[in-house]
Length: 376
View (tube, rainbow, N blue to C red):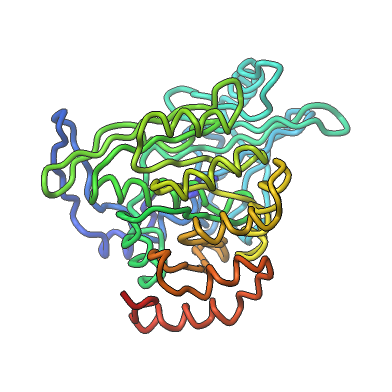
């Protein structure tokens, strides 16, 4: 779920990158300005490289090799993205691979299939599954810094609309397949909100991925604070309840995984909080329907589930990474932040029949032309 990195691999990128502007936060630590180019952010230090040379083929340390996901098969062979196409792989060559695999296996507690690993100062998200021949792993290398929202490659209209939602309340949902950067986009958005509006952000993640935890300083001197947590006893709905008792401005649920969590998330979104989350889905309509179906599974009626979605949704962004090097592709849908004003999106959500294509195309045209989506 975090794919963007910060490598600079060509002179053109370096030339176009703005000089780094550093300021100090309340603790005297350096707060970095915009330093990363958009191309370098689009594949978490795993961009397509120039033609391979002999030196490139030499084994390196795991932490020093450019990849986003490392696949470990039951026979202990390893594979990473080749960089030649959208999904092609190549055999991984690492000096310390046996040590890394041992660390991955030893960290597994026998219960949670998803867990975090800190290996020689670098964080990885591990997913353990059982194949026909035995256990296998996918190790995702997590970024050491959160990219600036401006550098992700979002269309300018989508970027501006998302930023404008900082003082609003409701649900911002990012959807897409595994490995399309949903968590990275949300982390960059939360970072932007904390740097511009300040306030308290409470995250519930398992495992914790992006380095959001800490203090942020706004231009007017106000502070932003983020605390990252894991769901107590693996219960996501309890994590949301705990967040609400902490009176946060922003709540981030790493992923909607249960019916109870979906209901609590929607209730939080309709009670004055700005809530952000991710879900696996093929498009915007599927994402909204999936959240509603999760909620229905908790025991509430379908009518109530879509009513909560209609009252709570602010935005749903479906995203994908395409090409080589990877480029961000998004399909956005926005609802009117003023729930008391007329809104086609909210009206359609109440019916449960999501024929959103015409609305989304109209919004896309307005955003491209720099026009306002809603009249205030």
